[in-house]
Amino acid sequence: MSLFQHSFPPCASLTIRGTLSLALVWFGLSTHAQVLIPFTPQPESVHISITLDASGNAVTDVTVDLPNPCTEAWDWGTTVRSGTNFQADAKFFARSHNCIQIIWPVSHRYHLGTLAPGRYQFAFHAGGTLVKIVPFTVPDRDSDGDGMSDLQEQAADTNPASANSVLRIHSVQREASGVRIEWQGGTQATQFLQRRSDIGGTNGLWETVFTNPAPTRITNSFVCPPSTRAVEFFRILAVRP
Image 1 (cartoon, one colour):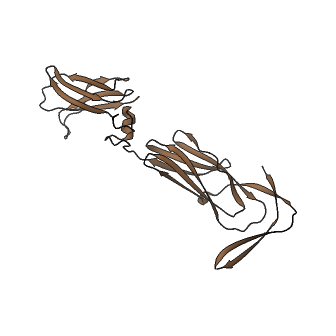
Image 2 (cartoon, one colour):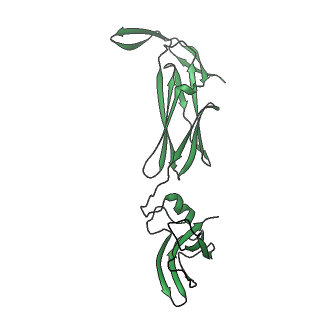
Image 3 (cartoon, helix red, strand yellow):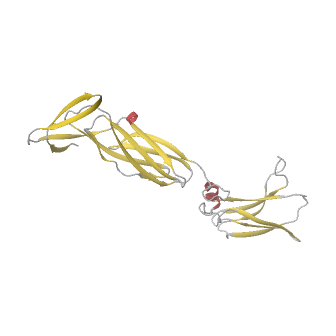
């Protein structure tokens, strides 16, 4: 596809006086047709950087080194997301008349939004042609400072933005019928109350003494049957389907 644009014919001169300067002189009022030719940059001329702020908001900065000022970015397009993959399709055009060859960088910023920890990739296209793919990783973090990472809170169905929403054992108390364990968590994860006698060595495995299938209450309790062990350790394991 070709586009046509009318403009005044230029006459370009180049002057070197310590630094490079460019003067464009326009003559007359006559016009001529210019052909706009679709242009696809080479991968080595495309520079992509992806940065994250403390909240996990990601931005992608794309800089394209165009071969001359007569090649332009007409449309940077918008970001399209599919799962962990992002892509953008920009349109570049080169004018048909002669132009001084000088690197002409142009830049654009794409906003990817708030991303959960994990692996992603950004694909940059030009006129429907894939030019460059850049993989990137959003590291795990503890956004609310409650001692559990955002990925752990996602698995437990708790809110990573609230320190009051966390999978946690509140109390362990001995009763006549056994040991009462009270805890809090999310509602859409199955919870497993487990115990063992040795936390530091390799002897013994975690034993599941109670399974609390989702959906659950925010706060829960269970009385473990009496045990002959002198010391016991307990934990809550949460798994989302």
